[in-house]
Length: 186
Image (cartoon, rainbow, N blue to C red; front, side, top):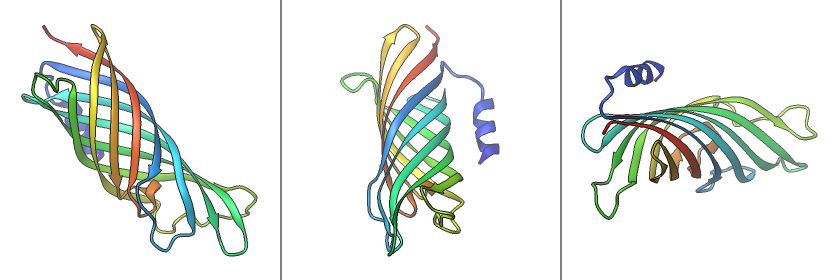
């Protein structure tokens, strides 16, 4: 996955390259089967880099830091669990044609995630989904990007992720807001 991202970044620049910082909130979009976890929610912060390919298509490389919290019930005790993970994605971005939907785009691609830290309040040890220290899944998303200055845009995204460590076997829904620095050729 890392080699793919390096290759994507090294591709010759077309007419536009973008760098973005974003922050968002996450929540499970479904139930974790057989789990004793309640209501996984969290936050994310991401660094993104987009490069145009041809026409309405672009590649996106992104690194996302994720923090999720939830309640765990082991039958005798109920306690708060906190997990920190990182995700590395290589996504294809497709923009809508000019006209009424200018600024709307879709996202699709693989994402690999790794759990960095897992801890529980008031517990000596925590079993954070054994065997799920790393995982590869996918992302589907839709977004809207609007210029706020000649070289700065504001981006809003809604994403559906599945197969990532933070979801513990369930899909995740993410809403994020980002500031984009764009290099445009006239």
